[in-house]
Amino acid sequence: MTGWRVRAAITADAGSAVAEFVMVVSLLTVLTLSVMQLALALHIRNTIQDAAAEGARFAALADSGPAEGAERARDLIATALGPSYSRHVEARYGVYAGHRSAEVRVVAPLPLLGLIGPDRGLEVVGRAAVEAPG
Image (tube, rainbow, N blue to C red; front, side, top):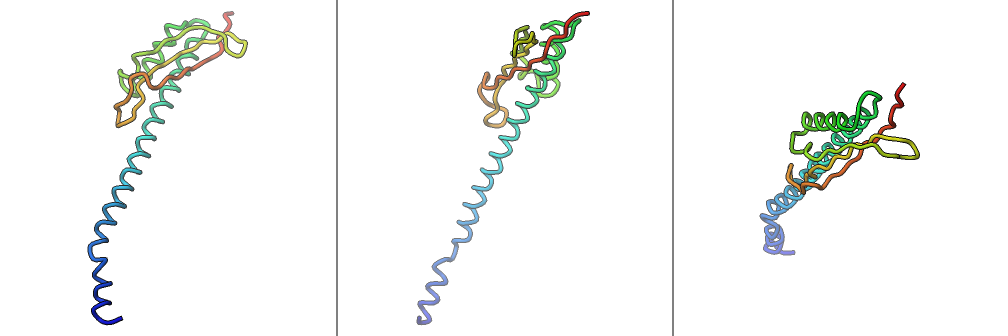
C-alpha cells in the first residue's frame, strides 16, 4: 500500500467510535430499564400475593370472617403499595382441594411503564384452610 492509501484507510473510521458508543449505551439503557420494570412488576405482584394469603389466613380463623380477611388484605396492600392497589379486594368461603377454605381475591393494576398500566391487569388469590370452631 502506498502512503495515501494507508492514511485513507485509517481516516475512514474517524467518528465511528462516537456512533457506536451512542448505539451501545442506548441499548444498555433500554435493557437496564426493562429489567428494573420487571423487578417492579414482580415486587408488586409478590406483595399483593402475600397480602391476599395473609388476608385469607386471617379470614380462616375461628373468630373471624371474610369481611375481616378482606379488610386485613386491603390494609396490608394500602400500607405497602398505596390505596390505588387495594380498591378491588373481595373475600369468601369456598372449597379448595376438598377442604373448606377462605379465599381472598385481589385485582390490581399491572405496572407496565413505571407505575402506569392496565387497571385490572393483575389478579391473585390467597387461600387458607378454615379453622373449625371449638
